Length: 474
Image (cartoon, rainbow, N blue to C red; front, side, top):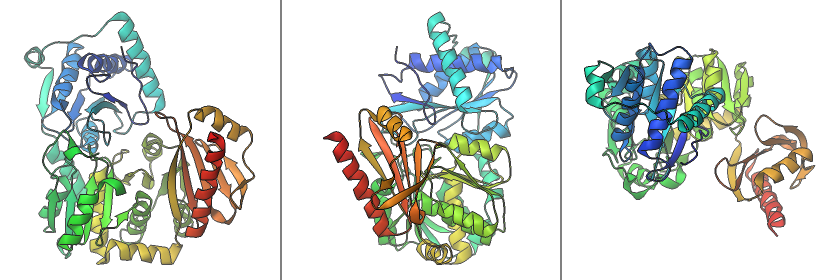
């Protein structure tokens, strides 16, 4: 049997290899056992899925196992975004949810996200306990399952409609009046994922001119990766420019991540989007609260927090850590450089649908293009330049331990002033530059994040790091 491990955001594997019906049943049984262990078996569990191949079938298999364990199960009636399913946990007072998704991974992958009762990503302690239950389930061959028909007969399975409840909540989060008065035109790219019709439907409801692309289910995602980053949004960029739209908005396969393109077809990075959203929430909404970012996310948020007199909290990489802070309350915005964010008043889970709508709302408030608003932010707070390098290094863990034991005194011409160990190794350099070194959890790679106060310095950092790795690999 394939080893089942929960990574940064759930378990993912290749279908018909590691991700099989048998293994899905084992994970479902482990979650059922964990639910009983913590005394929440009287509450229902939601089960959702995205648009991936056999998503519905895998969701039904999960339902068959949960109901065999006498746990009431609410099966979502259609493909749904992960944030909608997470919201459903709170709305239906469930003990948690199981989401069948591999998010932005390639089409041959599928996965399972477990969402506990607080409606955010499972903590490392919870996933560790689930893995222990998985091991025990395999050893004892203790999977229980019944048919869907029997589950319905025993009144343990109910098919629910989730979307209207989630959308009603979003209407409370978004200023529809501001959108209605705007002259925006938007292109929305669902990337064939579970977010189809959500952002475009909201904009249409608000009277905003928009067109949706890649809004039909396709388990192969059009032969592309359903990841809304600079590399995979070429179609959105083209449509925005050709249609002379105000901006382009995109979501990944399960719509928990966002992607943004300005009116010129230029990609707006998640770091930039987080800065824009913070600016909007303070300036136009008048909201306050802590700003939470991961260790790999832009320090421009630190400058803004200082200016606004707000607390800045840095977490390890992974939205589960951001979500933990949000659960404590009083978080204006929490986000990560990989394209996940949530805000005050929402669930402690990243939500690409909400973030896209907030970015449209921001443009409507300002009556400006997103590029113009970004210039306004830079004029007030200054601009920082960032990048990520993925360097091949089979002995990555050993090498990083050496860095921890003896950090470098210089990176390029810049002196290392401080070494931090929140997650990986973060080197704070003179002149406000920084470098973060983290091992990939799945590949023989070291991920190196760099941020500098000017483009020339960023290039010097990149050159120094590449030379560093050339020397290592000789």
